[in-house]
Picture 1 (cartoon, helix red, strand yellow):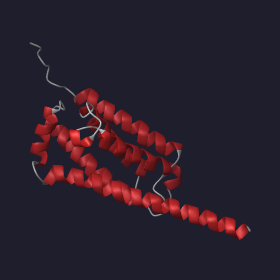
Picture 2 (cartoon, rainbow, N blue to C red):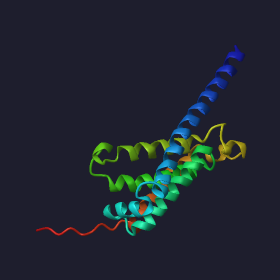
Picture 3 (cartoon, rainbow, N blue to C red):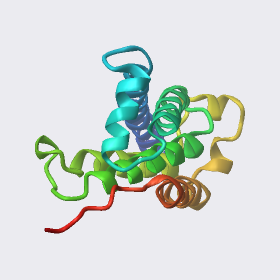
Length: 179
């Protein structure tokens, strides 16, 4: 009977590690791609800067660079499972700004915030649970130190502070005049 219990515990840990790897491999490359396209595709930094300016994020060029580099950097870190809660915090920070600038409606197909919320929530969950056994955090022996409440505070707390700080400093919408 004891053998079945240890087998179940192994299977459960293996399942958790597999689930975390799947989440990291979905989230990391996706955020990396978002940053990459800001850097090298479509309107690049200049186009992104204009879009950011239109949403009130000024100066647009600085914010475009910050978003692109944060997305590419955190995407790589999340994919590799390296400093995972810090990667999650960067993702949360970007998503807080994205949520705020799209806060008028819920559905993403109407330029809403649902997509940003899900990315942020998944990032916090992975940051809290840790990267799992198939990660560089585990290879370097820091996975256990960065998981749990420590991971949650880093991912959610630092991410929220970064996002709100970015908004406090850079969100400067044009004043509207009423007729």
